[in-house]
Length: 345
Image (cartoon, rainbow, N blue to C red; front, side, top):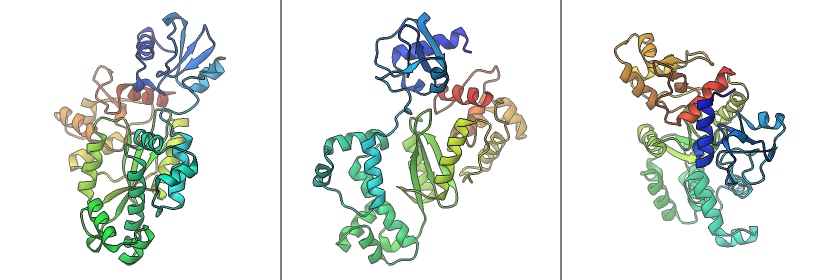
């Protein structure tokens, strides 16, 4: 299934515990009968004692049992039960002001909560809860309710405290807020978590959380749309979660999630052409340039691909070098290869 060069590259990833390959390939160890993830900390086997698999199911069907150390049946960077429990608690009462006593009553240490939320979301639990609470207030104002109603719903007893928190978060006081709110959510996939950002009408961003420059892209999106980005859920996020699950089961699935393409007319033409590449096929940058009627704009096409902010849906991973080599994928070349192979299968 894998040629020698690919097997050697995967084996080196196992030796290096390279997280870029976590979820991309699974390693069956013939001498022990177990299979592992790339990040496993167990003693490394010899190259000739390794089998390589695209997914955990293939390893199971080959007779291997999951490693108890790296837990290959779980998704890469899947949230811990504690994180899931606390996110559910926030969703059930977004206005709640959390204290150390709340954590004590749950039997958890506040430093553990802070560390796990920082790893998962890039922010502490307190910052996450505050963003969710403020997002609830923004939605209340947007729906036409009074500022005092939004203040009370967000759990603020003091009007001045609410105004200060609102202004710090959004950059304008509550009375000056007129825009929309973008909701963000983390979606677990076999290749690791993805961050999705959407309004109530369109998807604005879908990226692997380890993508280079993701924080800059989020900030650029916030400034361009002049919308606050807060944790939450809406119908668009529910739809893309469902369609991503279907895609990772069957790479030929088509997406119906509406996408907001924020870019120049040239960039939009490149992204629209990307969406015309059939699943399971690839094209070169030069062919993409020719198809949009600008054969001399190969470099500009490559830059437009890199500016795409809706991974997989706008399939920039289907564009390769003129000789078929993988090049230029911000989500990582290991992810790019996996997605191409998945769609071909």
